[in-house]
Length: 172
Image 1: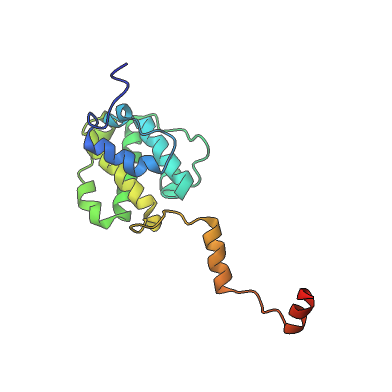
Image 2 (image 1 turned 60 degrees about the vertical axis):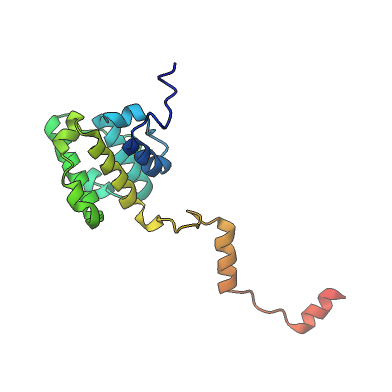
């Protein structure tokens, strides 16, 4: 029981960072420490599919379009490596500042479960690349409430003024 109740102090910082970035953006698959310590390919594939569904990031490049509700992952090792190489290149292309560091992420190592810290770095970069238009401004809410956007459009396009004669009749 004590093992299941893992505290933040016991969790590696790179796992906490993945949970704080990508884990706040997608509900499934869940960013559990045991999955992030040695991410299996299916877990990573499901993450790529969910991000593509939510943001369209990688939908065409990785899935040939909409990944659908439950896309079938590659089964052969070479196909998995190819998918991961395309995914890494896609994320690196979207984040030129991280491209050199992302080159250190080996698709073969990811398939084998080696260097999970680098795999987690890929996931963190994925969150940044997929949601970069929505990067929050310090102190601002991530998504404005619908009421605020309605008020803003009303201020931009105010209703026409009420003629004086109608206004007097309305008060009588």
